[in-house]
Figure 1 (cartoon, rainbow, N blue to C red):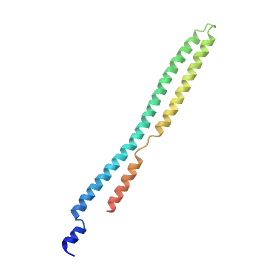
Figure 2: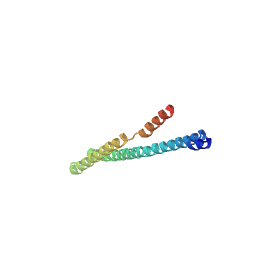
Figure 3: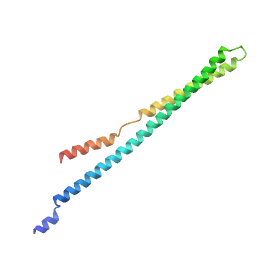
Length: 133
């Protein structure tokens, strides 16, 4: 077996280093893509939760306005408008219930926000594998 045959059968150190650099670069790029995709899901859930909290706050503002009108009508009650007062109170309770529901849904949505767990685990595995090499 000649020296040229041996050189052709085994890769050189330079080629191995270039291949390793390319593989590590590809691995890091894929881990970054994974982290981005996980964060997009979490950001979307967080945005939905914030939107629902904002809607709950708006509904509570409406409830305060309705309650204020209810109190004003109650103070000026002349005995003829009892039905109207109860209507104002019913509307107030309805707005509070809607706000409570929106707040609950917002809280559930915000609790779904997580970090890029898969990307972190993969990065730790890569770090451990590179230390072994």
